Length: 285
Image (cartoon, rainbow, N blue to C red; front, side):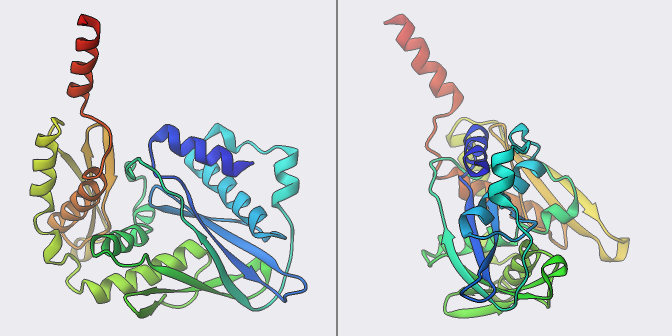
């Protein structure tokens, strides 16, 4: 199963385990399913419809492994038989959101394209909820068009309010990200919020406390000079965390620091220097 391979892949990378969501499509007597899986802050959608939520999730896991570059994404006859099927239908209903817990932080990876960074609004919205001890955002989907050319619209509910994506999108992850972006724009109108203003300092203090090297920021710019956008990554303790797209370099760095600090502050592992000390004491004894 691709789901098992993806879980092992995440554990090796020390990322949080995958989070799956599935959408039911078509009449009750002939349902078909699509799925998305969120891995390390990025969502991957199944490319074909399936006959069950389990098969759809397995297909989404296959897509994730393929795009993440894992050798485990090589198809096998059993996986192909259980994951693929051409279907059509009308109507949609959002079903099972399946979070999976992990003791590892959600470590980011360096940005490859600006488009990859645009799918981090869901992560940022989740962090917003966790910081306030709110229930996690709940997404619902609407599907339009035939199976071979379907489009998706998404809504997200948080703090008793519902926010909608800006129209229909070719993939579920684009639609969900648009809905999350709309929610963030309403909840944090300035794009940064007072809460992110000190995260660079907090991250530096945390790094010093855990005996890590100081954070190293890398910022990329995209777009025209008069309408530039910025995305930053920050490396801490050999892990790279990526923030959301921002209007200025300063805000982009704050966003990256926010993601890194939120993930590292609950980290369960010891600094390398402490681990080395324990090993040294063990040999001496």
